[in-house]
Amino acid sequence: MIATEKKYIHKYLFLLALVFIIACLWVILASEAASSVTEIFDKHYYRAYKEENKGYIAPWYTNGLHIVDEGFINELERLREDRDGTGHVLAIGSSLCATEFDPLKQKLLGNYDLMVFASGSGSWRTNYIMDKLIRQEYSYRDKDIVKIEVSYSTFRNADNKTILESVLDKWGKYSVTEDLDVKRNSMLFSSIYWLNVQFLKIQNVLELLMSYISPLDRMAQIGPGNYRNNFFNHKATAANFSITPERRKVVEEELMRISEDTNVIAEFSPIPEGLRETESGKAYMEYIDDSLIPLLEEKGIAYFDYRNSFSEKDFIDGAHLSYTASLRYTKRLDSDLNRVIRFINRKVTIGTAHTSSKI
Image 1 (tube, rainbow, N blue to C red):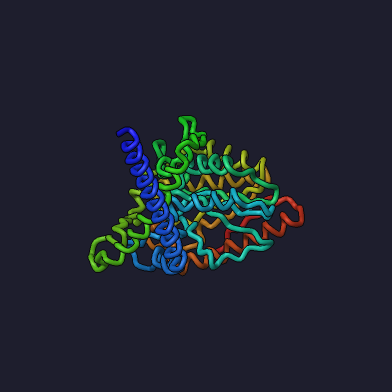
Image 2: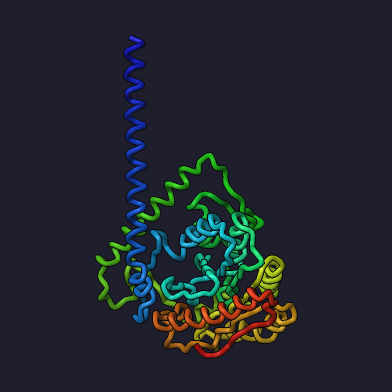
């Protein structure tokens, strides 16, 4: 009797293990298929994400992951696995002001690779945590360039949990402490964390499929994936950011800290004229002109000034650039980054390299 029970137990355990293995293989195949789908249609998604239609934008995914919420996961893994010693451009900042780079348009010298670390609002809190996250897996090199965005979004009223922190919780490998340090979680459940990311890739592709089923001819601001965007309300946007002494200090200290380890470029991202003319917008512009730029020049830190480079009509929603404007932005950014790369390869200090002309 006991021998028979043991036989059935072994049989059930074998079947359970078999089902688990088959399920894992299915998830792996489905995840790879999701990645392939978004990579094949990446250029199409990119264009749809930044189409000229005012009032709504489509979601954009690459390699199966949402470019804003989870896209930096791929970049971090790619950076961690790189061992060839080539310099990188690490863009830390928000996707709100044209950091959705089209990979097909990047032409950087010296085999430099552009990696975008963006997640959500791009507030000082988000940028600070993102730098800590990168340092968990990678040490900045002498030839690296960290391009950190200093936009109006940097001064967003984001004192509570950010999108980045929510994504990290969902991803599971890392957590953020009360002091905003990043720590790696126990590897005991690493397989569960990995499975969760694969499910995210599958889910995102299903969302893209539903985007084409959703009605697009409504009068309301409802686009693919029901992505609501009303950022042309500049007054409401301005009410959500403040140029406080505390935030100014955090931003300045962050730039100085990173500059001790590698080459830093502060990017003053495009801002629509309507937002510049608000009270908070004027305070932001004055801070950059009267305080931050003189400080950067004193410390020998480079900056790209694109604040006035685009007109209101170049924005699709008051924060993101349109597809055609984004291509102009990318071309100009490539040119400016290549100028800095030449300096670095000649072992010359970047100094106060800057640009502010129209794009």
